Length: 194
Image 1: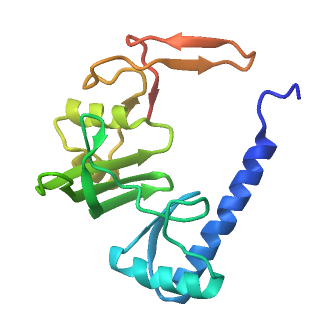
Image 2 (image 1 turned 60 degrees about the vertical axis):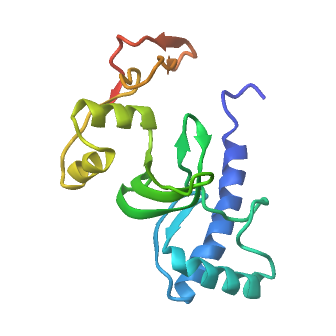
């Protein structure tokens, strides 16, 4: 109880998540369905293959694959405007996977109220916040997709994790020391990741 973290709890959570993911991934392989990228609790699969996978899952495991309950899967793609989810039937039309936990999806969907077609980005990069990705793309006069294409082609990028000029306000960032001291990093700080 005097340890700095509870890694044994994280290990149990990850172990159960891996078990759930393996049920789905192995079944998809058995059914000849490609999974293009997976993480601890998510995967990228062709949209039209989801019903086939869900039916096979229900037949094999006698429980529903798709839903909002614990242990079920659902599409977490969201198109937001002013911080609110406004898109429905959202799916990716293009994806670039650079490495584990590093990918971008170009999203498309329909506005819930107006019916207009919407688009957005779903970006992930382990250790780099989305705001820093969007800020660097803006600074380089690139779209986020162009930034990922540049990195896919071998280009190196340096992301400032403290300052994101496109943001309206500064996000608070901390640097943790081995002696358990915590220091606030200010906007003028260059705390970066390449």
